[in-house]
View 1 (tube, rainbow, N blue to C red):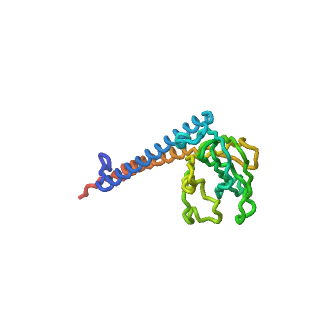
View 2 (view 1 turned 45 degrees about the vertical axis):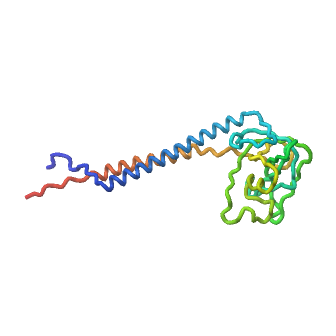
Amino acid sequence: MSTGSDFSFRPRLIPALASLALAALFVHLGLWQAGKAEVVEAQKALHAQRAQRPPQPIGATLVPAPELLDAPVTVEGEYEPGEQFYVDNRQEGGRPGIHVITPLRIKDSNTRVLINRGWVAWTQGRSVLPTVTTPTGLVRITGVAAVPVVKKPLLMSADKQQFARLWFAPDIARFASAHPYPVQPILVLQDPDDARDAFIRHWPPPEDRTLTHRGYALQWYGMTAVLFLFFIWSSFKRRPRPATP
């Protein structure tokens, strides 16, 4: 009959080191995801704070784009439809369409700012670009400042499309490099009620992935706990039974 425990804790060196390395990795990944959640939470709070500001006038002097991101802005000037271009693959309610980007020459200056005037349907087929009307004369535009993130297409050069004015993204740097005048480093998303026209202006707020990142962090912490329990369980070995005569 056994007089004590039939098992003893006998961890082996290599599994112990491997478990320690994996645990450190899992904790690091958990902290990384938790940090990303904090960044998203801070950005969400900053977005809400900037949305409460009164519209900031945009003039000839180039503005600091990061400080104006998501903030209301207003600008006066004249549209230049001759330099207008379109952003492809934009859907609204499941319908295919494009965003119309029109440069605005800022009043009493040579500086331009790009205005996203909104979405229009593209129903004529891809062989014909939609026809849109553009106001003439001095206009006052109110909207929200955006800084587009441009991802280059994988299978096609951004400057080799069916139409020269059909772009994959509202690339401010690309537009500025093709023109001799200064261009503001922001894109103005025109307010939905700023003009009576056929455009649909639906600008969703930034995606809130706070819960997603926190969920990933909990998964990594949970995997750390499971790894620890497995290591403990697997390190217990049955004591050898004494040989009986």
